[in-house]
Length: 358
Image (tube, rainbow, N blue to C red; front, side, top):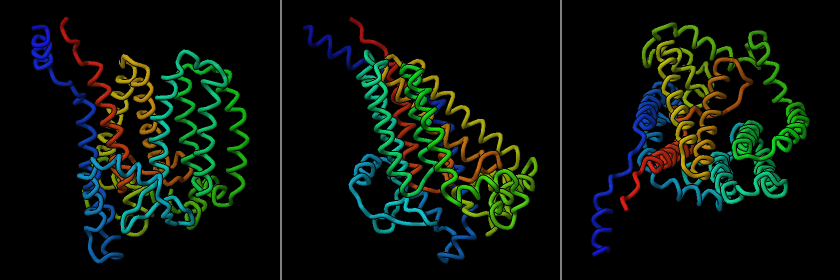
């Protein structure tokens, strides 16, 4: 009889209450992203591949393949098909599909840190338990990624790790000490490569070097300037016509600024703000340490990508090739960010799941 009552209670248990406020802006951004990828890449695709729908079709293919994200994550770790572009080997190619391992590394690091710090929460303030193992893992990722080379991704990984360790309760003295060690290393890496020095110079005065070093930033700013308040309309942008480099990836925000204007930019910012706010709220309200750390790690990762991509497009940060979540063309980024949103929604639903009556 007791078993029957338990079965009845389980059958009557309300379904998980997913965070619609988090899901809606994501779906909106993905939809806008597909439209803007087509608008930004149609001329380039027509010239290079003979069809204006090339990038649009590839971007759309990845959406129904989201359920295969975990399979891709495992496969990317054991694959050795390196692919070079732009002087850096940052991708793996399997047939006609390319993957960016650093995206997977960022996702994997967030999950591991959340799991590890939750497991060690009673000893998190100990140097050899709460701090050193996590920093060593970060160092391993950093060395492998810097050899690609991809300095920007290393900085992002370091920032995510530092924030998660801080929120997880690691002693502030250890974290400040790590910054004291990291700053000279970062400085050395910045000045040891000529192309990084050029990026800093062009960032400080892009108009002086508008023909070479500052070319990307100048044309990005021109896109925002000509967009005005209302924009030129989808498809009406000019800078994407072989003036603005990588308009469908690194600088899709510039195309949005030109074609959708200030109004479109503010709407996009509003949706990103809503996503980040919901992510932080889910992290704060989570009932378990793992869920809270995982939520803040995933939210931080997305937030940093948004800030850096937009900062570069607006000339507020030195040039760095980084996708704008949910909007830029790129299957790896779309898969990882959608999986991250799925995890966030699951954490948020779990905290609102009602307890079974006794």
